[in-house]
Length: 248
Length: 177
Image 1 (cartoon, chains in turn orange, brown):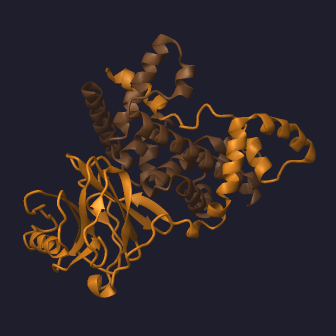
Image 2 (cartoon, helix red, strand yellow; image 1 turned 60 degrees about the vertical axis):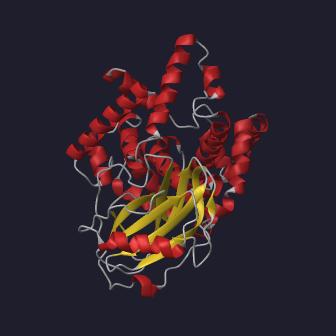
Image 3 (cartoon, chains in turn green, red; image 1 turned 90 degrees about the vertical axis):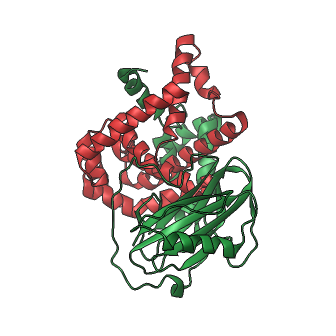
């Protein structure tokens, strides 16, 4: 495809997915907000009665009312695992915002058959973490994976001192089979406590269950062999490893 | 809602846009999350519709009081449409053509173009979300590299490099698929 062709197609590819639906949104919004005069209402209501798009949107607006009114209650990651401050209490550090190249490949997007995605929730907003992400105290992490076949997923969090905690499966629970799927949310997350220097999210995916001790030992070995903030993925045969570097 | 906020939004004043975000973005995001049940997808949907609102839809609003309901409506529309597309995509596999769109584009040459757009959308989904946002601002909203750079707090030269890399990656993806 030539350059002009591609650039001509891009606006179409980005067209809003709701394009093609009824275009009387401003009126519907005013109707829903009860801002219409009785005259406007009586002229709009016949449209609402016969327009399937508007009826569906009006119903969905009502359904989403609570999320709109109480956004803090509408969290999608529950339950969260809260770090023990003792584990990551490495001293207070100033928040460091590092802009990373936007097109840098996310190292947690595997070339093979699976990938772990890390989402960060900060002050009510959510963004996807990339390698070198700057995390602050109070950030919450949520994890999602994509896998084309079932396996066992372990997620670790490690710091420069070699402290390694297992985030998933949480506590001392047994390995759990991760079913194949796209953007599957795992129930465990993390709350970031004060820290400084380099830290890492390490994901291990294996066809066979991986004992917590083995996974943590692998994590510690990787931290011991790191070069600066670069952690090379290393693990036993049959275990796929991915690392996401975190700056504090 | 102060009456002059809408006027300032129509003048595309950055301070007014920040004020609006402060007031309503978390709520808009909450609606997307509620409907999509996928934090990453919801965040992208909310950011996209937010940009659409500030760049284009704000001119359609008649009174400032209607802004919250309009944003809620946009969040509902965008999320439910994305949810339907995702469900249909899961059922039919990657290369199906949206029947609503294919009905509009029944002519053969249009179908060919639609197929190319579908393919391109598949390639776009493989890019980093931020790269996708930059491409969207450039090619959907027609913003300049400088305007995009201001939005992300990075230089226009850097945006130029990102765009060039993304276009090269998309071209390669289109050739491979």
